[in-house]
Structures are given as structure tokens and as C-alpha cells.
Image (cartoon, rainbow, N blue to C red; front, side):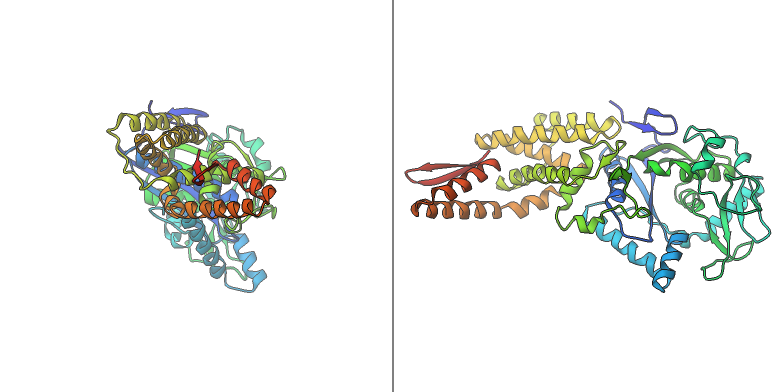
Length: 460
């Protein structure tokens, strides 16, 4: 089965055909860095990471971009509230992003473009838009994109212009020719940072940076553009209009959008104050557990943030850690082994269907159960199954090796300590507490067997 991707632009799953054979250009919208990375952001980061990892697994060279919007109304407002420089705000949360991304085992992007570093490319794209008759300059030096001049506007969201106006960031300006027109360049206001342009001092609008930076690094068209469903309109719709109006070429071939993480019925976001910062969540859940929680739902489906489901993911990941902790050594994957190849093929079948991680994880859990069964039976083929499991977990971005090394020895020591404590309790005839230890270990898959030679345990 060839890889198929659900393309928002076509509203269907489509076979993936890259612009350049063997190479993929890919961009996921990053953060506007006025606040901390939260679990809603993590959904998009993980989606991009999974797509990138699987494409690389399939043999593609992936040029991967994710940006930082480091100048924006919200960043300026926060800098004013804190009486500090806007660059300090941006750098603070960019640094936290890298803390989070590294902790979550998200592969570093090929490039991390910032809006403020690419002002020249932004100006050049605006000039092309103006030259082609799709924009206009106001008397104060602001520049707007004239939406009615681009007949295909709305093709991504599938709605008509008049239906989209209500959802836009409508900026009040008496010189705007149409309510849906959006800013390409914002004239300077007192107290704001500025750059020089042919239209006077000012700063880029929000949408133009992504069009300019992706075109600069990846050309037109490039293969995959991703982000949350909340960005389809107006942000991604505007990106298409800008890039295609400027250079007369298709902007992107495949548009990939992940569903939101919801909290109390609303999208988790900084603007509502309804969010959990990732670093705070990682105080109680390790990165593998959080990744598992996110991947158990298909990327296009919304997730309701739930401690119950996070705890389920924690328990589920302990099964993997426990298994790898039982191995004397971690096997090297060998795809020439038919048993390994069979399981990996099932994994690929799931992932080729629009990166279906729930089905891919179902394969992993089934494989884990089979491998644990063989290990407990002393069957040497357990090592082969463990090798296949390692391939799957690595492509999904889990740190299985690290977990195994951490568990190796520690699990045995802890269980042995509990066995010894239980034996002492039995000698003291405290059978109630001794039975509680036995039952609790049993619920975790550790079975105790009392024999004339002492208590033994086995993990099932």
C-alpha cells in the first residue's frame, strides 16, 4: 500500500507524490512566542514529528521547517506589561520550546526561521503582491492584501468569501477597501519596534512571514504544510493567497491539519487561559507517557484533555518498560528475519493510511503481548519480536532504549525488596499487609509463588 495523506485542500486521502523524488519539503506552523508551550501546541509538534519520522523511515530526505513568530501584537503587549524588551519575551519562550521539544524527543528541525530574521524576504514578497495588483498601500504606510482580487480565496476552507469575514481578524482601518483585506505590513505605532521598508517604518503582518519563509527555504510548490485546524482560516487561507498572488505558482501540495486538544469544552489556548504547560505536565508524566497519550488518538481527531487518559497512558507505557527491563540486552533489529518483517509490515500498513497511529499502536501492543508470552516461556524468538517492537517504537518517537536501560536492574531490585518485606511480614504473621503486597504486585503483572525454597516471582 502506498502512503496516503488526507489533504485538507482536496478533502480526501490522496497518494503521496513528492515534488522532488526522494526528497520532501515540509513546514509546520510553530509558536507565537508570547507564552509557554502547552499540551495543545504539543499535539501539533508531535504530529509534525511523526510525519517527518515516518517519511525518513520510508527513505525520504526531509527538509523540515517550523517557525517562531517572534514579533506580534501579543508579544509587544506582554513586553509592555512586564516593562521589558520584546526580544526578551520571545527568547524566553523560544528557550522553553527547545526544553520541551528535546524532553519529548522531537527531532530538531532543519531550520527554525524567525519572522524578524526574514524581513527582507517578507518585503520582497509584498512587493511582488503589489506589482501583480493584489495589494495596496494606505496613506500611513500600511499595506493590505486585497482579498477580492484573488478569485480562489476560500479554496482551503471550502467557504465563500462572505461567509469567512466573520471569522477573520478584522482590523479596523477606514482605508481598507474590503472588510476581509488583511495586513501585509503594519505602519509603525509609538512604542513598537520597527523595520525600514519602501512604504515607511513598520513591521510585518502575521500571515506574510509563513508564506515568505517557506518559499525562501522550500520553493513553490513544496510538499507538506501542517498546523492545527484552527489555522485553516484565516491564517493558512491567507498564506495561500499571498504566495500564489506573488509568484503565480501553486503554494503547497498537501495540507495536513491536526485536531485540537480541548479543555472544559474549549480549545486549549493561551488566549483563554485554559491550558497546561508541557513542562508542568512532565513533572507527573514522563515524555513517553505523554507521547503515548497523544498518539492513541488519530491526529485529525480532537482530544479532550483528561488526567484519567493520561494515567491510562502511564500504565500502558509501564508494560513496554517492564518488558524491555526483562531483557538481558536490547536486540539489534534485523529486517531479514521473516517474523520481524511480518510485524513491521503491519505497522507500515497502519501508518501508510494517513499516519494512523492508533492502529500502529494496536500493532505494537499486540506485538508486545506476543513477545512477553514468548519471553516467559523461555522462547528465544522473543528477542526477534523485541527487535521488531524497537523499530516501531523508534519510528513513533519513543525512547524505548532509554526506558529499558533505566528499568534494567532497578525493577528486579525493587521487586526483590518487596518480596523480602513481604516475607518478614509473614514471619510476623501480618498476613493482611503481606497479601496486600502480593495482590498489588499481581495487578501490575508480577506474580509471586511461595515455594519451600522461598518466594519466587515472574512477570506476565
